[in-house]
Length: 324
Image 1 (spheres, rainbow, N blue to C red):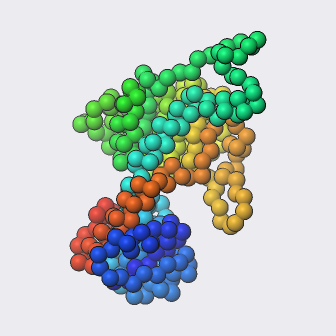
Image 2: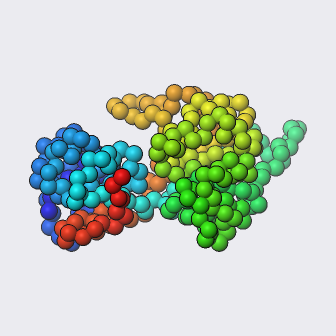
Image 3: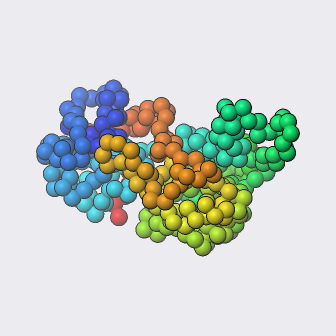
């Protein structure tokens, strides 16, 4: 068996994957362009992308293993009969913890309180000679709306219920049987209802043509001015200009953004968006790290190793994705 690890993320996992493989394999590593010359006799490609040059260069490929959950860079039309596709999860605990943490941080203003106290300024009821600030709201009793109720949504709902939050969700198809602590899991027809009721909105769904710019000016205007938005899915699900206008104009209380409209393509500083989100005090900016945890890396490496072994035996992979 020959395995090709293409792209930064796949290469980052390569050594760990090999440590879990119970069968001997030849492995090559490189970026998505450099790896092309090694694909002629490759059996398994581990890559976030699958392009026409990759398909043409890999006639004996058995499995395209995506080392993440997202399929937006996989051209499924290139999957010939017998070539299987699978993705990997394992990031749900880390991302759910990130969402809970950012909701707490936004609500309790940890960043600004820390910055003030480092300068000796007490933005609290303990300050002398200044008015007391308003008390912080609690998560308990607040409504969390979840857009997309897959692995991440389920993990998040359990944690939010432990904080005594009310949880409702929207997914592509309504779900009658809902987990404990979840009010309802509706279809797209209930999206506006969830937006209106949410005190916190977590975006955990996949990027498809129908979800691109799903949240535009009209839909963001449905949300409470006191509401917070957390996006850990794909930036393009929320219209960039509409989101900036809502956050800068006081139509949303704040946001935590872990996914972006621009990513680095070369060494050096790269601003993550065209709009000046970095100038807004009510936004937490993180560089797409919500799922980057030890547990995620280990879980994905084990799954990829298991799927390589399955491919060697001619078996279907775990988390198989059907071609469109």
